[in-house]
Length: 308
Image (cartoon, rainbow, N blue to C red; front, side, top):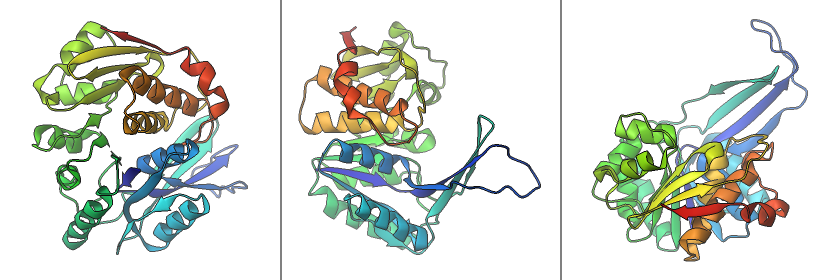
């Protein structure tokens, strides 16, 4: 079973408008509401793959209950911990080919709730084969909370997709994740230097002591594929050129593909191909966290893995 953890989920509200007028009334005919958060994007992809998956994290208030109801409607197992603060809304106004986002910061988590969640997570981790942590931490949690979560989950493999100070704190800590998945920009921020897609530079970058003790480092490079380090060996992933419709959530789809292949103990080639093909499939759809599996076999045959 794959356990997905979303610490700061949301209800994502989309307002499509032909024209957006400031300081005026804007009427919306077709409002779209979906369950949001990087970990829940991973969850939806895993469900489409018929993987055994359970979603968890922190939820609160009316919006938290709505998340649970929507997951139940989609036949997705979930075991969230309820908190006092309200789960957030994330609003996207789609207008004139542009997207204006209004993102609430989310709930404030108390010290007791943080402690309760670690206990909750420990019980769930026992049942899991692979665990995925995705997204930002809500207010109130210490910056090393992902580190604490990894410690609680040991010895189960944890795949971590976060960025910034939260990721840096984990990399400098004692308890290491099994896999991390930064993009090029996030990798540059971690190493505090410019990073390109040059293979030689990427090999040097991923050889940095900062990544010692991590089994998999997978760097997503958008249209240019990916670059990975596993067991001190390096792999360049080359993907076919596609027409991207909506690339948002492709990193989450990639993580889902990696998780399924790792859970099944597949080869390096299969792990990397599965992760990348799902990222591509997500980019071809308008809906975030959705893939059309009818194109799976055609695309995966076009992905090339080269050890470098």
